[in-house]
Each structure stands twice: as structure tokens, then as C-alpha cells.
Image 1 (cartoon, one colour):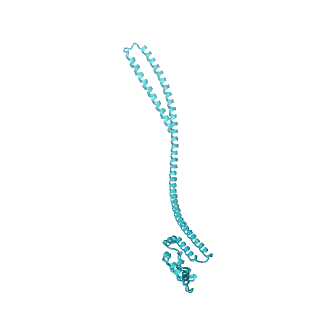
Image 2 (tube, rainbow, N blue to C red):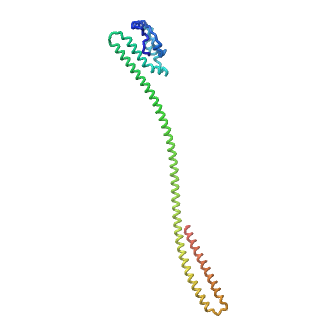
Image 3 (tube, rainbow, N blue to C red):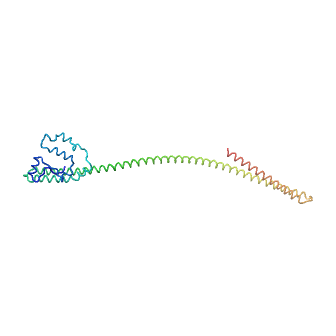
Length: 277
């Protein structure tokens, strides 16, 4: 508990006398950090009368033995004073056995002191390892929590992206359908324009043919009128023939233009009707 003996006297004889008489003292210099329960346990064991001394069962049932946990302050003090206790134990061992004849007792005590030191170092190492384990466990828990949060966030984002991608696919298919319908309409209009162009070319050919025929007819009429003019030299008013020729020409031109317009409109109506069908 402290590394010091409560029976220690100024000399070896005094120490032996204290042990024989069970005369001990918990020096505050060495036992200041020892708990009251531990001192009570020692006092009940250091009884000369065996009938009053604690039995094994009573010793195992003592509160200091059954106490499972100590306060953190006591644990810290224990760690800080472990090295000091082993040093005191070594000093006590040397002091007790320095005047004895050479034997293996001192060597055994020296080995025991070293074992105690090694055990204290191991305890400190275990304490450090336990603290590191707790810290590492906290870090692992934090990383697991962050991973779970990120995984949930990625799942939400994945669902959102999947939904948007589905909408984009739907819009793309819709646009493709409209594109195909538009292409079909363009092809239909193109075919209609091709038919109209053919009809227009036919009408143009008919128009040119009619125009040529009309020109020939007009020329024939003009020649006829010229012959009439030569035969009618006895007429009093010479201007009658020119006026008559002019009226005939205008009437024929009007008749020709009207005929061409009617044929052209009839052809267009026919083409439009075929396109609608």
C-alpha cells in the first residue's frame, strides 16, 4: 500500500520488538495516501490473538476487498505514488537485511522489489492503453456516425438524381416523338409541294400553249381586218376601221385573259383538293 513497514524502528532490534509486540504505527509520511478502509483492514489482520484476528472468510468479505471501484482521484494518486512505494520497499528491504549474514534472503527481496516495479510499469502501461482504447473507440464511433450520415445523404441524392434522370428520359422520348411527327408532316408538305409544282408546271405549259394559239388567232384576225379594210375603201369615214379594229382587239384580249385566269384557278383548286385528300 505504501512501500513502508508500520513496524519499522530505529534499529533492527527495535523493529523485531515492535513485530513481536504487534506495535505498529501508520506514519503520515508514508501512509497519507492510504485509504481508511485499507488501514482498517490491516489493523484487523495485525492482531496477535488468533481468536480475535479476522478469518479468511471475514477478510474476503471486508469492504476494502469487496470494493470494486475507487474514485478517480485515488486512482491518480495510486499511479503517481507507485514508483515511490517500490522505492520505499527497496529501502526498507536493504535496511532490514544489511546487517544480516550473507544469504539468499536479500536477493529474493531485491527480485521481489524489481517484480513490483515491473508490475507497476505494466499497470501504467495498461492504464495508458485503456485510455488510448477509449479515445480510439470514441474516434471509431464518430467515424461510424459520420459514415452513416454520409450514406443516408448519398442515398437521398441518388434517389433524387434517379428521379430527375427518369424525368429527363421521359422528356427526351416526348421530344423524339414530336420530332418524328414533325418529320412526317414535313415529308407530307414536301410531297404536297411537289404535286403542286407539277400541277403548276402543267398549267404553265397550258398557258403558254393557249397564249401561242391566241396570238395566232389575233394575227389571223388582224390579217382578216386588213383585208376588210382594203375591200372597204369606199367608206366615208376612214377612222371607222381603226376604231373597229381597236374594239375587236380589246375584246379578244379580255376574253383571253378571262379564260386563262379561270383555267389557272380551276387547276389550283384541283391540286388543293387532292392535297387535302
